[in-house]
Amino acid sequence: MHKAPRGTFDILPEEHSYWKYVEEKAALLCQLYGYQPLTMPIFEDARLFTRAVGGNTDIVDKEMYVFQDKGGQELALRPEGTAPVCRAYLEHGFYNLTQPVKLYYLGPAFRYERPQAGRYRQHHQFGFEALGEADPVMDAEVIEMAWRFFLSLGLSGVHIQLNSIGCKLCRPGYLDVLKEHYSGHADSLCPDCKGRSVRNPLRLLDCKKDHCKGTAETAPKATDYLCDDCQSHFETVRVYLGTLDIPFHLDHRLVRGLDYYTRTVFEVEPQEQGGQSSLGGGGRYDDLIEALGGRPTPAVGFATGLERIVLNLKRQGVDVPPLPSPVAFIACLGQEAKLEAVKLASELRKAGLGTVMATGDRSLKAQMRQADSANSSYTIILGAEEVRNQSAVLRNMGSGEQQTVPLAELIRVLKSR
Ligand code: AMP
Image 1 (cartoon, rainbow, N blue to C red):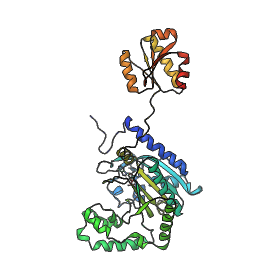
Image 2: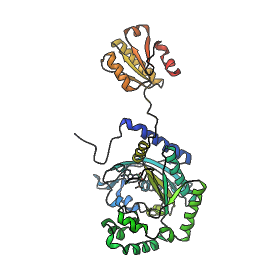
Image 3: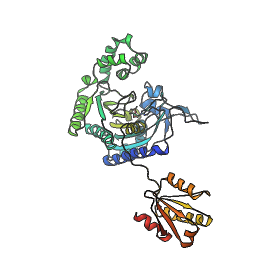
Image 4: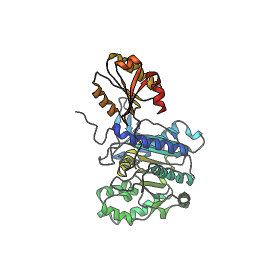
């Protein structure tokens, strides 16, 4: 028996009420803030991610699904959405449009990770990106948008962690003092951090191991080493967030796992925290489009994982609207009635009334069981006598009440209810 690959799962019909709920809230949010949809391919040239996300990040170095296609091209299943959005921005000349260009996407991302609750090898991300704008008001708007999204979903206790990691001018100086701090603790670092201190020192701050956490707590803070421009940008973002009444906590250990970030970085954490707690994350990436071959283009964005949202909706017992079920189920007895049922089903659907028809030659009792599992509001019963009288028995599945209705009246009667 085949099974879904490790770290992947089927989203079953009964789960789809949650997914539809989240996807609709996402589309509504983007409409509110003036973002337009963009759908990118799920695989891209692998070098796009190496260049954008960084060859020394876990995402690219350890987790990316890379393969050669039959033409010998090295492709990667996308591990994230920001780099593909920037690629599309450049490819379609969006820099010629009025800036900022605001885009959103929703779709799968792939990372070869150790599967556990909230961490999968295929997950789905909803992300939005504002490209071509340096104004700190844009950072605040993106953070507000993320905040409003989780509120609109009915999730409570969500909170925002915020930091600034500076720019290419001030970060090297900060990395020097960070490395110096860690060199005093070199012997006690975990093997991963030993590697990070050489390859990607900023990520040292993010280590989840107890001992390394202590070293990170006492580490110098990036915000104390920002250049004047980064300092003033960060201050202005915080002023806007204050004006918008968006609560946030400064977290000097927040650095994000992708190399393209500059200045503002933030994460959204759920009420109940665990190992895989982050609901979403984002920030500014002012150098990325240039690194991909474009002109210097400031940008800021955010992405969140749908699986973790659904997990938290369930944990918090948030009620989501059920998927619509059919209005009518048609049960029929005998060949003549079946012929009438086929016609009727087609007419009801044409009139916009969701209809399921009994198939096979089951007893009326078995067909009523089918009607129950179709979860229709009404069952229409057709037998030889009904066909003769051009009528049908209409049964309200909620109350059990039955009445005989002329076939010609059925659509009107169903619509009026
Ligand atoms: P990142 O690009 O790593 O910041 O991821 C953005 C968001 O995607 C995270 O906050 C999670 O909600 C979600 N996410 C990332 N990786 C996974 C994964 N392996 N499984 C499920 N969700 C994930």
